[in-house]
Amino acid sequence: MRWLWALFGFVFLGIGAIGLVLPLWPTTIFWIAAVFCLAESHPKVRDWIYSRPGVGPIVRDFVERGEISRKSKYLAIGGMLLACMISGWFLRASPLGLAILIGAIGIGVLFVATRREPVA
Image (cartoon, rainbow, N blue to C red):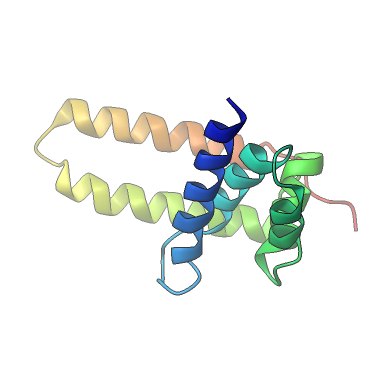
């Protein structure tokens, strides 16, 4: 079972790495998933993610303390709303698809908005 967690972790790491060079592609959420998958089997990879400038401290705050900074909340919610608008345009002919999309984005927005913020 450990190899399966490692496989998922490295897949998430690779998908997240795309966001380092591709604008609008999320890195943080995939690296958070990677850390959760790799925490036990590959602590050196977890530490490598934590040491990445910019995204590492954000990942560590969330994974270790469940915290999201106010700036990160704004960026995450903004990204979700942008994705909702773009996806909504493609789903405009499907009321059920739009309802599912809006519901899913709404849950994501509520989750992010209700996380604690790091104490400075």
